[in-house]
Length: 167
Image (tube, rainbow, N blue to C red; front, top):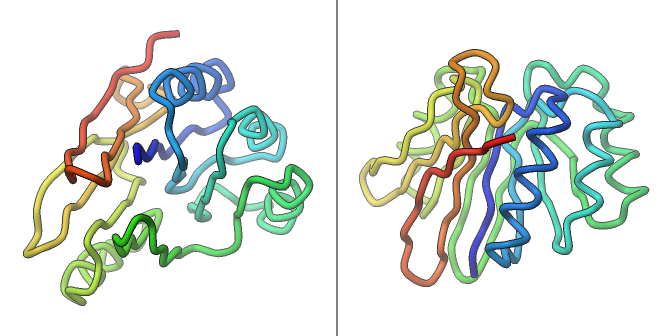
């Protein structure tokens, strides 16, 4: 399965639409959002995904109850907490926003996750830590560093890739 991964969309609706278009074109089976969607109208755009989405709250997601309710209203979006522990195609995936600097390190040191996803830094990165693959898709919004990025993960090959959004 191809998993679409993004973070730090920060209400950039054209970027969100372009990310959705790329995920659809790649036939993703699941989308993971590592926080900082920011408001319910932006989250509502993700209802257009033809697959499920799981997200965690970031430091800019201050309307957590409203975001949780919007995800439930859509029916395909799960936004429940600041941490997700998922089992996808036999892979254990941990996801946090990453605004607590020790959280990503703690997940890596726990040595129980095959994949660890985070955001917050707005800098894309794919690297190994022990047996875990760490993926930060960078900033979908493209506002801090001028390059909007997302990531994909192939659960069959464990290959991950950073993709650039153009909108």
